[in-house]
Image (cartoon, rainbow, N blue to C red; front, side, top):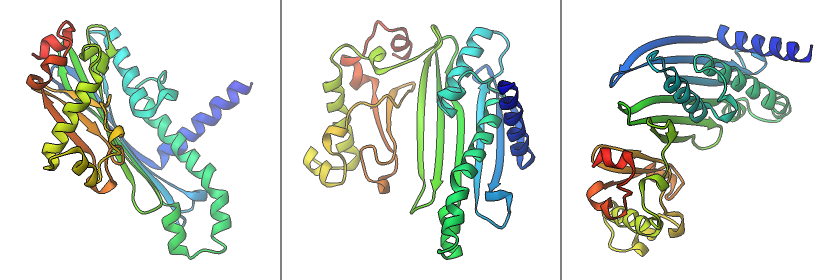
Length: 283
């Protein structure tokens, strides 16, 4: 009975979410693999009152629909859901995950903020309180690169605003080895002991990009502390290089935005694990 109540409650929340949201599907083909995009655009007002602050949720979620290899499709979609919505949703079917996440987002917004809103509205100017309680989140994912039987790169870009001076945006890449359907890490791509030399290459490229002559000058420009600048697992394997992406605040102030460090394979060659299939295919 308890499970039945939870199920009915969850379905009611999802239905309420969808009644106040637009939802669309779009099919496409990326490099020979069939995909689809689910788009959701919903607005949730506190107390379901359009005169009160609201949270706006926008989702554009790409997943695999290709029927030729069910094992690959299902494995990739579990990774896509996990990386887009979080581990909590990993076992949710890809076509259902966006609506379930949106419903949970709406419920959490109202549950967490309605009581404090009632307290603050008694003492705070209405314009100020509206800015405090007006939330926004955008999630957009896509297959960034696809090499049949070899490599798939999945991108998730997000923006979240929960009051304050500005929102936070981020882009995260997941590189997937299609041969064994697992996420590729730096330890796969590089030989043992790569950390120090790769850190040096990243710092050297940063100095070139920022047009400074030393690490001290780099730090004076706002980068660092220097010990924060190290190889990141947020990278994209491209045709001629590897791009390391540092999101806002990771190694530089917000004003710099995301920092992209691109290093060609020619420069990385002494560090690359050339026995790894993915590396062989790129070189």
